[in-house]
View 1 (cartoon, rainbow, N blue to C red):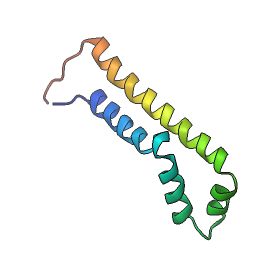
View 2: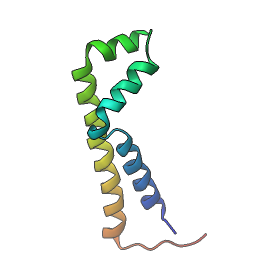
View 3: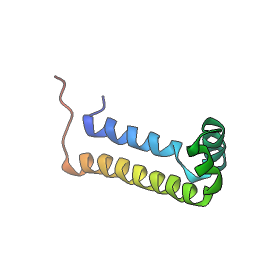
Length: 83
């Protein structure tokens, strides 16, 4: 059974995995194809370095937040209680 902090931490980790820099070429391709013909698509296409840095930053922050939530629960020594 997962506690609230654990499940929230796992959600952050999984969300961060979607923005992992090793998937950056795929992420940029999907963004470009999805946003094609829009102003946002033109922004992604013209400023791909800035978008790449932003995606990597999202990955770092999501991974940090997920790890922080998982560690905070374990350091507190709390146990899950069924309601």
